[in-house]
Length: 502
Image (cartoon, rainbow, N blue to C red):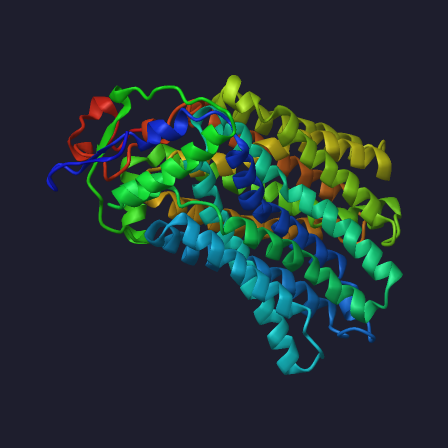
């Protein structure tokens, strides 16, 4: 079942994608998901810790920063994520998934670890603080591109949807961990020490995971598409051996599923744009719509929720962590309980359904809020119900952009849509913060909620018409690799090169 070398003009005939997709679930897959999926936990942890210590950093006994200077930290971190996603996403397609998911985690460890060493509030120290947050953001942004690619390429097709959605949903496990950790550290320890230890929670967890990642193989799919047939055979043989050692038998591979590839040249972002908008225009619209709508809604609601609790419901800042934990748990439960339906009922029904349902529920909640029928507890319950669906839908957005484009540009495509989503998502807190104001005009926030509902419903409608029915399909069947022999010769009826193909 090894890759069979053939003349250079014909490329390499391989069964490696089929061998990956026929694997039963094993300890290898569990270890891989834990080792790679921690990226989302770390992101949720970082953002929550930064939000929790924001007020603390303005106090004289810490860094005595202004509110504007502290607020800029979040912007710097998000900017780092965008730059990191684009930079490391390109390197992931060029140098391999394993090289990059080791490097990006190391970058995050350095950035977040050094944040805790900010010793003063002078101009130099402030620049140092901003630089470390930017570096930490770069590491996490790079993780998104490299990790999503690796998981999709190593998970058997029949499990890919639920695994991707569950992994992306663990962002909220990080949010819970960050909320509990900073609540304890800031209330039980000296503030000057507590906020620093808060930023070290992630690096400690990341350091342990870095050791686990050392034993993961490179993506055999990436290797075979880049002319590394022997290395690809070694990687898939290692995975198969581990599965068999666990007592699982491997079914035979259908020889008809072999594909022939001729390694393609490296593709930059300009060439990527041509691939996206010439070969896959409707998929590009789908990916952008899903990522923008979910990012706008999440940033708008999550980053201003404590303001709503304080301005409209009179909740003290000391009590807000309790509500945030409930909010995070609601987000975490959704992907883990209904994620399997994306593989059974299908992508189109579930993606469009989760987006539309969450949008409709948000519109209903907006009406209840404006009518004055909600309090802090019932508002939080409403958010938990809404984001039970929205969280699964948002995770499906990441799943979508990571599986519907050719392997050679997968990481860069994820990076591009992630960057677009972050740029639009950054508008959410600004707009909704202005709508909240002093809490004297609930009608403004009511209108804002309706806008958010409309955005999510629009995303769902786009998915209803443009979603790709990728459930249970091999990645190569969803989007044929650019390196596949004869790809450019396919007819419009086959849907490869048509400007209308999806």
